[in-house]
Structures are given as C-alpha cells and as structure tokens.
Image (cartoon, rainbow, N blue to C red; front, side, top):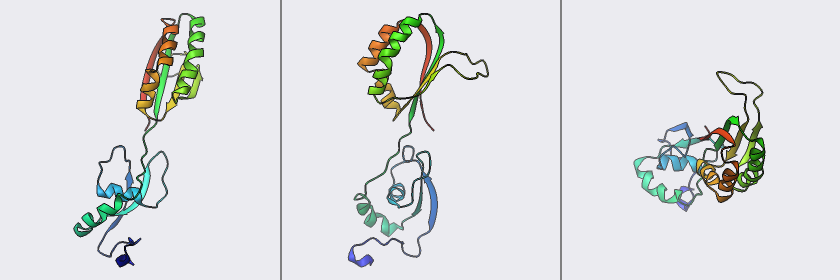
Length: 172
C-alpha cells in the first residue's frame, strides 16, 4: 500500500509511539508538531490538542516533510479577557452615557460580555464596585477593540466620571 503513493496509517515497525499534549501557540514549528496536527485524534478540552504521534526515523524526515504541507494545519489561540474593575464612580450619568456607546463598540469589535455588575461576594481587600468582563478571540483583538474609534469616543464621553482598573489578560 505504501508503494502506490498512499501514506500508511500505521508507520513501519521500528518507530516508537507516544502521546503528547500540543499547544501550538507555544510549541515551535517542527516536523513532530506538524505530524501531531495532522493526526486524527479528537481535540481535548480548553484548546489543547491530544494527539498520538510517531517520531519519524532520519530517512522518513525529508520524504514525509513534503507530504505534511498538503495537510491543513489546525491552530488554537488562547482567548483574551478584558477585565474592568471600578474603584469609584463620580458621575453615574456620564457612566450611563459611556455604557450606551461602549457596549455596542465592544461588541462590534468582537467582544462578548461575560460579566456586568457588582460582585456577589468580595475577598482579600476586594472592592464592592462594578466589574465588567469581556471575552475576545485574542489579546490583539481586545487591544484593537480598546483602540477602536468607537471605544475612544465612549472614553471621551466618560471623561473622569469613574476611576477604573482595566486589564487585558490571555486565557489559560
């Protein structure tokens, strides 16, 4: 079967098998990673891919490397979270005007609201103030949303009506 140009599903006998966890965003581009990506094992949770792969022998490396390019590579990027914690609100009317502009601007840029409101419980010097959490496809998308013209206009309307702590963090 290998002689007719079809890659065998099971490699030749001297090859050793192992199961590895691949996180493509952190892993270097290598033949082993590419082989893992083309494997047929279903993905595991949280963007991690579990693959059963085989390490090619020296002879197989160059011959199979060209065949790997034909396979579409999977890639998973960690989600990003834009977290806003309010320390104080000086002008609730200005905050309401900001929210009317910021919400649609954030959603238009790809943000998804996960949390909007006051904490149910605080610990370790936590402040009982408004908290907003949005989910993004990547850190770059969250930064682009923050730097967008629509959100800049919302910030102009907010002015100094609230003191806040804003953080954009990458998901695990």
